[in-house]
Structure formats: C-alpha cells, structure tokens
Length: 185
Image (cartoon, rainbow, N blue to C red):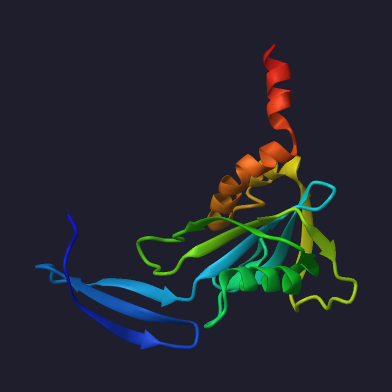
C-alpha cells in the first residue's frame, strides 16, 4: 500500500545535503532522510585485468577505505560526464568509452539519491595527471577481489553492489564459464 505524503520540510541545509522530514497519513512521527546529489561509481579494468580502486581517509568512519573511483554528479552535469571526470581526477586514467551497467539506491531508508554505476575496459593512463590530494590509486587483480571482500579490505557496501552489477562482464572477460565447464567434466 502506498502512503499519501501529507507534508515535506527541509529541517537543515548545507552545501552537501538537506535533511528532510516527511509526514505520511495518520503517523505522528515523521520520517527523516538525507537529500543529496546522485553519485557515480566506475569499475575500470586495466589491460592486465586489474580493477582500479582509490584509498582515502573518510572522517565520518575515522578510517581509510578502499573504493571504486566516483563522486557526486554536479548540478547540470550528466552522469556519464561525472563518471569520466571522477575516473580521471581520482586515478589519472581516461576512459575512451564507458557503459552504464545499473542505477542503485544506496540506502532506501535514509538517502534520496541514486548511484549510477559504470563499467569500462577501454582506459589509458594520462601521464600529465596530477593526483588528487589524499587519494592513492590501488590496483587489484580481478582474481583477488573476493579475497579482499572476505578479509574486509574491500567493505564498501555500495561498491559491492556495483561489482555485482559488473559480474557478468567480468565473467565474460576472463572466460570463467570455460573454466567452470572444464572443471565440471
């Protein structure tokens, strides 16, 4: 059953987000959420079958994280433009082509935005790049990704969703179906 929205207010606002409250039906307590810009994430695969990640310090959780390159889609910017720009800014790689593989909701209980997930194998390094302050490029062989998830090295839930969307492409790229078929015989 869809509830009728009775009232929606912004109770706090800054340059990064709005905190909104929403009142539905007969409920006395409002729902609160963060209204923020949509994100982009890019799964970029090198010619050596490595996935590009960035390591950076996240003050909110007070630790370094390993994440796919990405960021906000600025007002007036197309998601694909943001993805290409974030990939270059954070990794120094330029994608000649990029493919949208899915759109996800990062937290349906608290966030209003979406994640636009992109995939590319068509990348080259930009030798003239300047790395973003505080961001370190990391490359992980595709075969090591599951071990990185199990060990907790790669634990960004949003990025795990992105990797799940890319799984058919990764399996196809590595011809994993051929290996599975040979092992089952």
